Image (cartoon, rainbow, N blue to C red; front, side, top):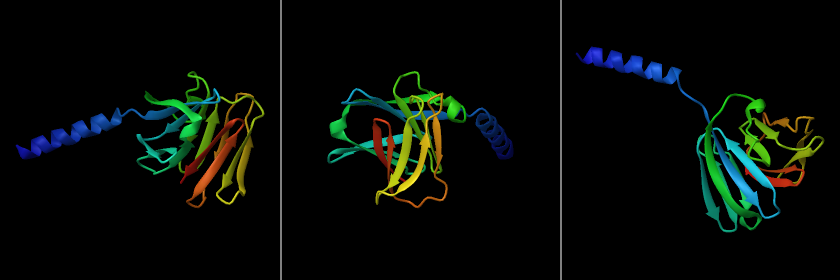
Length: 162
């Protein structure tokens, strides 16, 4: 009897994982300058307030986004089903969306021709891109050291820790 129960449990587990849905967890920041930023994470992020900064940490990768509280009017979290790739970044809620992973930064919702730059903690330019006609850009971060980095994308600026 135990063998049958274990076999049924294994079949159910396989069936459930075959229908697993990927979700995006988005932090929506409304800033004091009127801009809206959306930060998409692959797993559930945790937000904490440390002194004068809002810190958002993704549980799986420990990627961290840090924004000064003085620049934030309010923020919300959203959970939604996603596909793969930059074409699936949701931008219909307005503002600029940043999808950050261990090896890549994807940006959507910019105007065409906006410079996107990533600097390390020492102020050295590590990567740059220009948003395309569709307002998107992708910057590869493969092989980068762990550390603090600053992103400038037009009027949007934030730091992240990888």
